[in-house]
Length: 567
Image 1 (cartoon, rainbow, N blue to C red):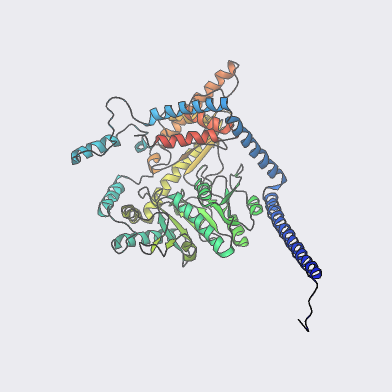
Image 2 (cartoon, helix red, strand yellow):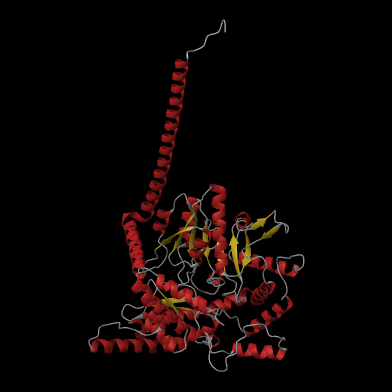
């Protein structure tokens, strides 16, 4: 057209080619930049992980971690080799069959109820069956023969608890308008336990089904707090290696990485410098025990509190075992250590009312310094078609009868009752400890672990096989707790044990002398020390301690759990 100018076709093609080439170069450049960014982020992530690994464990500790991991992996591969796997599985099956024969009644006269009766049983039939079940052969906890397990407050209290059950059998605290009495009792239980642990104004708590749930809830609260307030998506917590295994369960359930800190001899308390080194931006919780389950040792809670305050981290004190003993040690005339909310770094505490609070099994509490911390454990669903749903802990429906039994136990005992029980229980524990430390028949070969202050005394031996001693005590009708890392035995004293403590010490003297004599004979016969042993504890823990990979023990434990559900 007149007055217009157009580029020649060749120039237009050239321009388009240059434009297309420029776009391609820009795209390639952008891809390179994107790849470089990804690489830098990848490098930063793993450099950061390596830095905190070296900071927390040190070069030597990191090398040991790699070595142990390699040993576990290689041993796991070895166990999966065809010939080895078949032999191991055969031995596991034999062990489980032996266990089943001991736990599951069989033979003539054993009745099993595997389906609903066509017609319901009469009251007399049910009562007779219950009586028969109650009288099945068992370790006599009634005679004080069982370490821990049964935290019995006496027959009078038991009758009162049974009456409380009867009044609130159908109650469920999920319906507070239907069962206002249960709501009131639950709130008062929490208030009483908060007061026992010197909680500040504004502190809060909930009841749970037991110590494990209390610990799970404390870990969940810490995880949710860190996620909501700091955006922590890869949470980690630091705990003593002696802390209750419920913390490891919480780590597995809630995807929290667990760092274990050694509790070395002679004190067996958590090593504070190691705790400090392991703290990093992903740390959500520090943990201490008052006391721990294995050895009955109270960690340095004051030291942990200082670290937690300085690093602005939550600190949970597991007082499930110490429960109503530790807060009352001083009033009962015994030595104690700081452990509760009077330490400003302590943000949560777990306390089992069903241990030395003597409440029925299925009762515990988790306490928080503030209501804000408690809210992080709540579950709320606002858009469910069934209506707005909210629950304070893992369970939805809960047995109000247990809450009634707990409330009745606390108000029946009162502070004076618990102080008296503390005096008896801790006094008996110290009697056992003194015998092991001072009686030549025991002190020659046994050594008390650390310096226990509460109801648990643990002991080990450098000259005798401690698991032989455990099996010897079992043969005499005692059910004590075998420990590992290091191999040891502990006694958790309860009120029933108080009455049997002299017999326990006398039997321990006899068993130690018997094991000592067997060792002497072996040495005289030239067979060496600590020979092959046949007892259950020696077999299980002796094998477990010698394996770098615990998969065999895990299989045995799972088989044990399966056995519990065989009718």
